[in-house]
Image 1 (cartoon, rainbow, N blue to C red):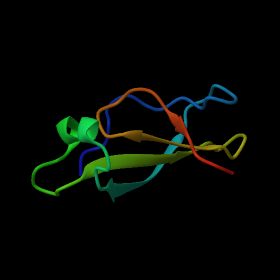
Image 2 (image 1 turned 45 degrees about the vertical axis):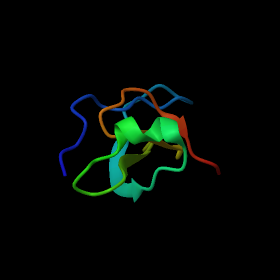
Image 3 (image 1 turned 60 degrees about the vertical axis):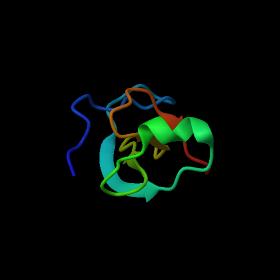
Image 4 (image 1 turned 60 degrees about the horizontal axis):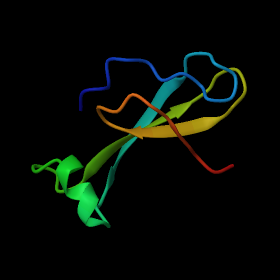
Length: 71
């Protein structure tokens, strides 16, 4: 899968995060339908980890902003 071209910036400390993984998330709301990859049948979400502070964040493939991960 192709990664997002723009690096994710850590929402806690502001440095560039490392791309860690991608996962397929199945849509749960009608608003998610536009983001579904028709070949995979779900939404591709990127997972990132901060090498400095250890924070984790995710975003949908193609998005620019982070979503904080619990923990």
